[in-house]
Image 1 (cartoon, rainbow, N blue to C red):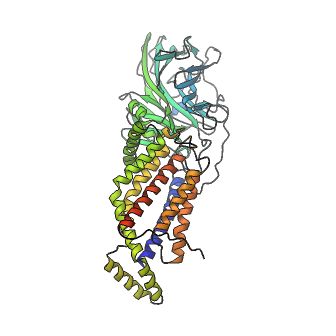
Image 2 (image 1 turned 60 degrees about the horizontal axis):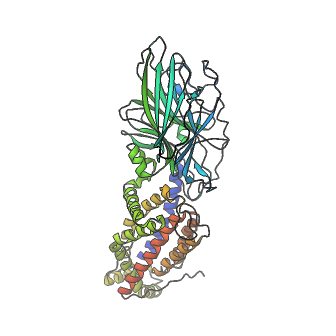
Amino acid sequence: MNDIRRTILWVIFGFSLVLLWDQWQLYNGRPATFFPAPASKTEIKAPNSSKTEPLPTANQGPSSSQLAATEGPLAITTPTVQREMVVVSSDVLQLTFDTEGASLVKAELLKHADPNDPKKPFVLLDQSKERVYLAQSGLIGGAFPTHKTSMRLVPGERALKEGANQLEIRFESPEMAGIKLTKTYTVVRGQYDLKVRNEISNSGPALVSPQMYLQLVRDGNKLTGESAFYSTFTGPAVYTENKKFQKIEFSDIEKNKAEIDKQADNGYVAMVQHYFASAWLLAKGVPRELFVRKVDNNLYSVGMITPLGDIAPQTSKTIEAKLFAGPQEEKILEALAPGLELVKDYGWLTILAKPLYWLLDQLHKILHNWGWSIVALVVVLKIAFYWLNAKAYASMAKMKAINPRIMEMRERLKNNPQQMQQEMMKIYREEKVNPMGGCLPIMIQIPFFIALYWVLLSSVEMRNAPWIGWIKDLSAMDPYYILPLLMTLTTLLQTALNPAPPDPMQAKMMWIMPLMFSVMFFFFPAGLVLYWLTNNILSIAQQWLINTRMGVPPQFNLPKFK
């Protein structure tokens, strides 16, 4: 009877995990992982429309409401300057700045390929019909320069020259209410963060107290090419030392349910997506007001407002910030700001995932191939859990050894369930077998393998990383489905090596469930399938070895679907 309960519990546990995970995804505003609904796509208005971006006006007060959208143009007159898209390049970035506001309107990552065309660089920030994703800044608290103000590009180099370590791009606004804003972006070789120096000069007759806002604006559409079989987060994020890392769903902003620290003197704001992120960073100790809000027409923003204090006539003040736009590489993020590495989100298993990633990275330094590093990491984990697995497989071997005796007894007492149960418990006591003995060691390991799953799913290093032969990208599906097929075969082999449940219906379920889960892996990244395949092969080898040592020859319990 206990083996029946064990099988039923495993079936219920497996299906419960699937259903609970799907409901958790839906609860958090994400698409269901296993039973996704078709995603709708919202049309985006042209980004130069006055209704698609926030337009601060002169009569608004110093709060996040200052960034609310208005219907008309700015309530001030600025000199007409010909609008220009300024393209600047370094060894890792190609950036496009709009002289309207000196905003960053396009960021191409030269070391990362476009998923649809490997010959083209990956585009993170963009301003097009398909995507609106911008980095903006400006002044509020008066009729001051904003991200809608026409600015002049100071002539200079636009490409990082061979041997040069950095490049400066400078924009100057016209004087508005006596205030002139000069933005200087510094691009550094090999780095994805830009140093942004904002100089505010007061040539007017009166003392002024402006505030600076820094914001990231993005549409709420799903990324093209997202998998229907696993879900990743896309949207704003805020970090403060008080509330730590907080992801904000677009739907929560829509419903005014976003709860973040409004005031802080530390932290950052970011826009996060699979593998990549952008973030505005200010120095620790600089006071700031944090905000997330809907702009208009499916556009959302996350940002910071920082007071600049009083600026006396004929004086100036400088405030420095950093703008990051690049891949979620932990070492790069950790070096930039406290907590920035959390944009690479491992969820509730971060405490396990971070050391696993560290170990994977150390193995890669030795093997110089991410595919073989995954294989090596699974080997290390199997060695670490060898004795736990040995205990589980020994319990299964004992169950297999007494299985003929159990089957004979069940047939003999099939009309007397009560006596059958008593006899079964007697056999278990005599043979010192615990029917559930193989479950606990496996359960202990599950969090580690789930954490490894998220490490492999979240690590941008897997993107375009080859393994062997036909596997050119560990973050993409196996183009010939060879790894998923091998994984399915090894999963079925594992099932065949386990003791067959005496109940025919349970026996069928024990074969159907592995097949159901294996089908999903046909649509998973090759790196994830490789890790699971390696785990299966090592598990089979260990189970085979333990069975042989215990004098229980491995037998294949094939399904009987009649």
